[in-house]
Length: 321
Image (cartoon, rainbow, N blue to C red):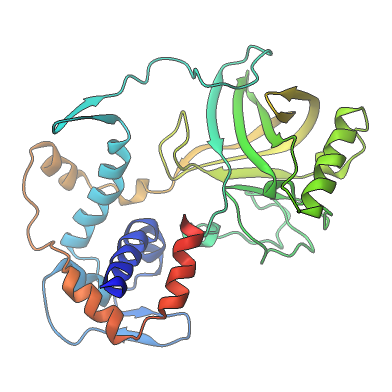
């Protein structure tokens, strides 16, 4: 029973979080490529959504399902559940009223928390060539890109002692004419028993005391793909470059590094290409989608058949938490 529940959680986690990656890797040739070069060939002919996904076919059912998954999930954030089977639509007209440093008075556009992210840009279908200096997502030279990925991505032209993206807790983007003000939040308190964390906080304190020659302030570009952010739907790409350090502020247990920068991407929708007008009309009219039932029993049987590594799955779930 425990293994069954684990497979269910893994299935739903990757059905929603990994769907866009799957879209990018789909082919019409009846096969879906795997990492080791092998392929999964669907032998039974079926019109079910799940089997169409296994075959890698972009059927009408697949088109409708991915549209509904992306846009229904996105719209779900517009409502709040009040209990008793009732939900109310949220009012998003008001400005951000969270607790942030805003003495500069600029209008807040986006507030994005920074967390460990299992996905990188390639998983979202973004082709980032780290060798090209004119890449619109930034430039990376001689940096180990195999390290942990976070919501906030930072690119630089040198190997830093501290990857500040590992210590950022929150990013606040404010509008300043045609430019943006970026506030990066860092905790003033090091992680207990973490020597590098203590060294980082000490270096940040030196910046606060006036040493602005720090490598912490030197990077080429910053970007993030939104997830549960204020001011933006999920899976929207924002990217900035030409950072100019303006100030460091102590605020509510945090140091806030403030930069002025240029906009590269001011909201590129990563799921826009999967919008389907016909499906949208069906949704508006509350029409039922046919032949689109995902068989959970089939999903579990496939996981069992392929001898899924349960220990690895448990580790993945812990990372996701």
